[in-house]
Length: 259
Image (tube, rainbow, N blue to C red; front, side):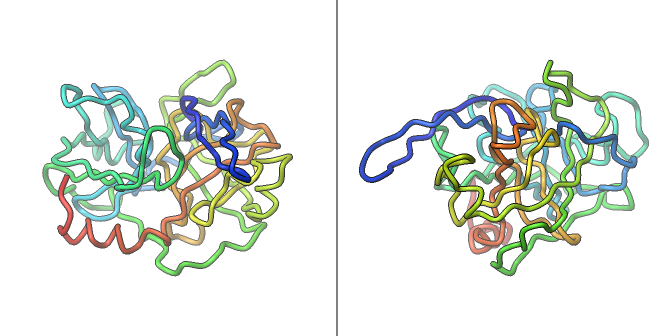
């Protein structure tokens, strides 16, 4: 599940090194149990699925900031909740208009840092068994390497770019950041605000950006970037760690920051 390619300037020993790092990416997964992830959101632009997201409470959805790169004020941004299929009629599925969009102030189109965004719905979501928030990780601690976590989304499922209509899910194994930063992997590009998961033929892919990485029933991360070729074992999937952004998230959710 990683989307389009961006270029990130990395300063290494004083020299700027450009590295192509495509954003957000599920490959090698399977169809999720329908409505077993009631927190899942589809962020849509002009009626088309763009990215995944997580319902945090009745009015707020968390996703990746780069999902809005290139989106203008003339575009229609909406959030679909309660869905398994993006197209088929479902009794609990509902599309919500977005009242305001609040990207993290440090996010930029040319960077993978601070890649978080919050969408405020125009009205409270109707909560129930099929639409339910998922809590964020509040404790700023590393997830143990080898921990199995869950990620889901509507991103592409083949190298040919086929997009699924129904939600896909994948179990991934967390990778130690030091290993992930080896030259043979991401060569120092993974910061303390990020975490990695192994990607050997099983990976997030284009359209999965913004989807939650769920470990033990809490959101640990948000799909951010990885390899141009999804499933490349030498380019693990990279997620933005939510615990390191708790102060900003609480500030916005409490209504102290506006778009």
